[in-house]
Length: 355
Image 1 (cartoon, rainbow, N blue to C red):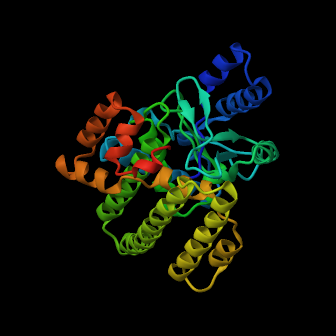
Image 2 (image 1 turned 180 degrees about the vertical axis):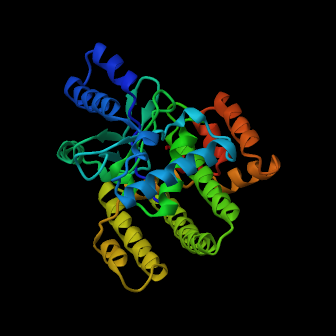
């Protein structure tokens, strides 16, 4: 999906952490619900055989299977990446996750878990629990953001299912979601959220583009054209966001008092919002929501976490003749580098290294 909103749930991590007697209530919540998800999975092939299957659900599940096959055969993604099962949720979304950052520096507040390492988000399956977590973070004076968890990957530990909530998405969003999550099961570096998400976003975008190019139909051409239009707008917004992130970072590193820094922060963010409004369509719910939103550091860090290093990935992709399998292989070779070294490859400014 274009705006990626997720949290990585790993059942083995939950059990290990439980054994360490840390965050018992939180981990019990996650472990219990993850176990419930695993128990609730039904093979998609079995569901598609039902005669009374809802047409929208049938179309969405068939599309997910087509996308999965394309991901393995044409994109070189890990076949253990899931999407062979279906789970009917008893709630509107898979879950919600909270992110936070320090108010006067570009530094994420992080949580540490075995296997996945340090991560800048904490997920919950129920919204009220996520809201409570966010409230506690705000009490600490942190900039926060609560987002919907649209998809997640267990990095190949389990066969991740298609959830009922995901079938509400458009055709191209379902396809992009499958590619993005399967990318996580193909290349993943512990504790490096920015590289992991930016890499998966690149694979998602390039993979979806190739999918529709090879579909070669009038409808696929329309979808591709609309995605290209959105991509151009997104590129403009990201470039603008990077420009203002540097302005904020420069302010945070001055010798001014915290009060003066806060004033400058507010001024810079207001100026940024005005610039964004000029780019967005003049009318509509999207623009209205943006006008009403109070932006903070987490909005800047969140976007950079998912959309850094596109030029780097494009160059590396071209070097291997746009061969996805060789591209993934070369990405895996970067495991020996530190997070800061990988951030430099992505072209992340020195002052905004933190993921």
